[in-house]
Image (cartoon, rainbow, N blue to C red; front, side, top):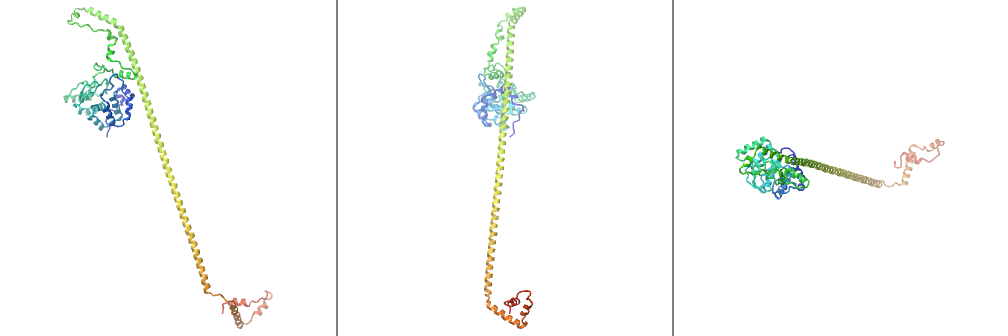
Amino acid sequence: MAELKTSGRPIDQLLEKVLCMNILSSDYFRDLLRLKTYHEVIDEIYNQVDHVEPWMTGNCRGPSTAFCLLYKFFTMKLTVKQMHGLLKHPDSPYIRAIGFLYLRYLGDFKTLWGWYEPYLKDDEEFSPGSSGQMTTMGVYVRDLFLGQYYFDTLLPRIPVPVVRTAVANLEKMNLPTKLSGSIGDSSRGSEETSRRPPSVKASLSVSFGQRAPHRASTRDSSPIRRTIAPPPYDKDGANGSRRSPSMRRSQSRDLSDREISERDRGRDRDRDKERTRDRERDRDRDRYRDQERERDRGRDRDRDRRYDHERDRERDRDRRHDYDRDLGRDRDRKYDYDRRSIERSRRDYERSRSRSRSRSHSRSLHDQGTSLDQQRTPPRDESKDKKAASSNLAKLKDLYGDFGNKKENVGDDRAPNRDTSTEEVIRLGGSTWR
């Protein structure tokens, strides 16, 4: 939802400076920090607010509950939908009044008449002040738009063209264009508001823990007002007509001579009071600025602390992520290494088994072959071989003659004589030759 269009000016320039300072330094406003939502603030208004004056009633000890809650709304930056909910709220007229005050202080002046116009004839009755004087919501809204003072506090000034347009529209609607007094008088410090001092004097007294002086008692205790007696009332006016001009001049001259010293002393006292008030106002302004600076430093420290905390959390999260990722990589690497070693050992085992299997198979085949050869070839009989060799030798001698003696005679010098008949027969034909 879109935010409400505002004038763009800071809050401390819309409210009176001293009223703003007292709101920010009040204990009740600090307690409102527990309220986080728009509806919680509305419930607080419904339960606590019974008038919408800016200052507390009685001896002016601080800002009112209504204006503390109004300032709380300033910090929340309401939306258009929330503002419609405030202005049309059925539970309490003070909720609606605080909504109209929000628009009067913070709203855009060009759109202010568009917000106020539908409620100019609203007949809901309530008491804006603490005196119990009743008025209608329409009269309150009209006085709030046209007035320059709100219960002795200064309202933001509306541009003259906007006011002229609003007055013309009021005349067309047959509504009054003069203030009715529902939000106090049109000027600060009138007789009707003498029960409460002006806001600057009241706020300064609150700052120093003193009770604000009563305006009527201050007026009566003035040395000039106490010494100057009112002229005697003459019913027929004969005394005034019978007195000569010179006598009247001498009497006025005598009065001025008697009171000139008192008047000067009174002026000096007033100047001293004004200087003291200015010094106190400057001191309060400096104190408020110091508080604002300290509050800004605290916000900066908190923001830096949160930033450092978030940055440390991000770093820890990244470290944990990197550690988990490295741990996963090590786990996968170990798993792959174990798997490869298992496969390698399996292949070596299978290869060794195949080799042993092939050796055993070849050995079994060799044993079977030797056994078959042994079965096929019966064992030889040496006696039979010798007989066959001798018979073969006899046949060769019959065919070729006997060359043994010749060989012996020729090779006497070369080698010793040995019987080689059997060997030559074997070399020529072998034992199996027939």
